[in-house]
Length: 188
Image (spheres, one colour):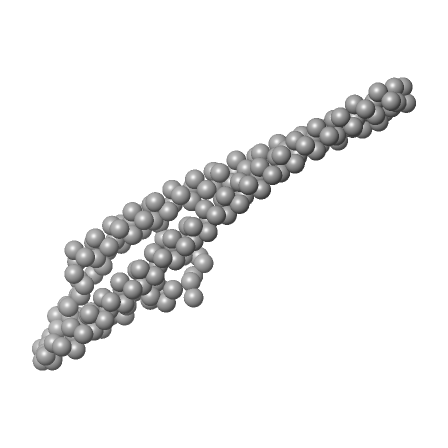
């Protein structure tokens, strides 16, 4: 289950420090992985900001279209009030205005629908990319965990460390649980 209140930023990835442990991960590989995760999060953040900007622009266009629609309705009411004085002329003008407004509205709605379809396609592509990325990362982590387990099983048993304060700390570090973010990534 993913914690919805957890928000990982690229800076969080870059600043995270891992304690040294006996028979731990290769520090260089971990640092390279952290850098790749940082860069990908930064890229996805930029993409998300671009999409947010586009969405705001579309909302602004929609508001403008609604204002135009409201203005057209007000023009229609004014035309109806003039109807008593110049009935035939006002009816022709009102019909002309309505045809133009409907045509413009239909064009605008079609254009907006096209943009929504395009954005939906982009969102779908981003979702596929995200799933592929998570699948690749899951496969990589599972492979590394399998290799780590295999190397642990292949290694001859080591004698228990001497019972001193430093040995107790080493033993505690070797039994540290896997970080929760790693468990979450593997489960996805």
